[in-house]
Length: 345
View 1 (cartoon, rainbow, N blue to C red):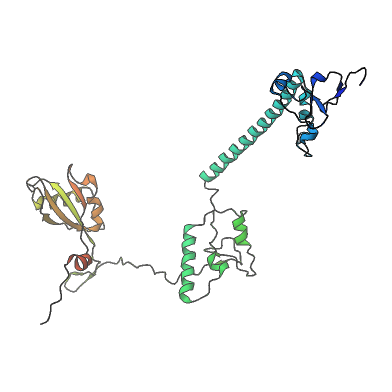
View 2: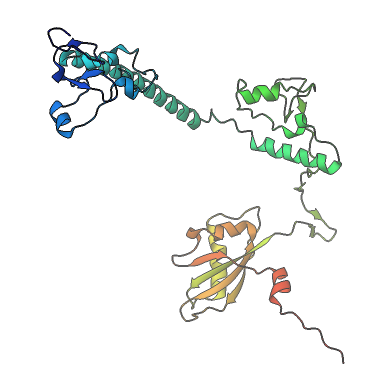
């Protein structure tokens, strides 16, 4: 204080001035601060008769943190100097920030492009079936049959020999699954069950054939044996017969005409197989509209059934399909009404 002039010290900027009207005084202590440092309008403050507390009484630090907490921007020069920057400096700071953001965006774009290329490469590998590591379906079935044989015979199942699925021949040798199956942690020298050992590995055990395999059927092809009377003694097979349902035939056509048409079509088309003459049996069925069309049940050798089901075999408009034969067991067990037991007097 000099010549009656009071010197005021701002608790925010620590500047000393002799004009007390530019300061606001704390309501609980003698400390003062500039109106501009506190962002307070002097006119509105006096009109409202508002009260103000300094940073020491309110526990607020100079960097707007409460109490003794350290500011997260205290050591960041950009944020620490931001309140004191002019327009040009603030613009330059924003330009630096935008440059950093653009660099980050360019890096992210490169990562996205690499990710896209990898996804396309994975898709091509999947399409070329080089990425699939699934085992051969035949090997899986054989492993299942071997497992069932062990269960039926009462033998314990070995994990290294039975439960492991054999390797597929298309499976790459450098994948993790191949390394695990070819180098098991068990002390057993046998590694896995395979159908064949192409590379001659003595440690690979060949799969034993299933006991349930059926022997191939032997079919005779010798000539017929002539008898003393000159007739040929034949014990040839019984030819399997098939039944077809032919409908939408002109009602004026007779049964003999249908039989002659079928035999003629087979001869003209050179469809005679194994030198077996077609034996056609025809049975006329009851049509719903007998004046409009007729229906027949055709019984023929099974080797010709596929030819008769060809659309080009029949004239235009004739319909043909396999004849539905109800099961005898169904008729016997389900379609017959149950018989009531007779009561005895």
